[in-house]
Image (cartoon, rainbow, N blue to C red; front, top):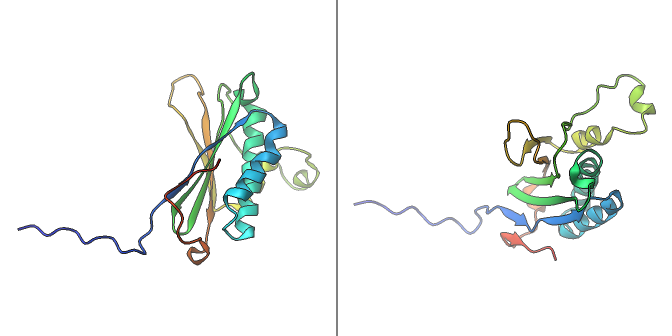
Length: 170
């Protein structure tokens, strides 16, 4: 005789995904990206929403600046996921077709203070627990797009209760 596993307790964690948002590949969409993140995370602490919105804006700008996302009919996709009770994950998928890979520039000393550009990933690194990237599809010679992600720590007590497992964003 085999025993059936116990049913999960009502307080057991269930991952939550927000419907991805697709943006035209133009830098003038960055403010819309920030606004949408703030709206999607309105029930979370303001500091969390602000950090994720800032990171989303930076990752979106990099997608537009360095990939085919800025080309004709180009776009970038933003996704959010509560992957654990204490982790919120942001992902921005670009249009690929570039040899560039996300990296924090090797600036030293006062160069960081005087640089006018190329500090976005350093900022993301400072406000996120971790960040990285992976290819949309492994290909031996083409970059068909990258998913650049950042994870943010949460106090599980501050995660809104009653979130649906899939949140529509429109």
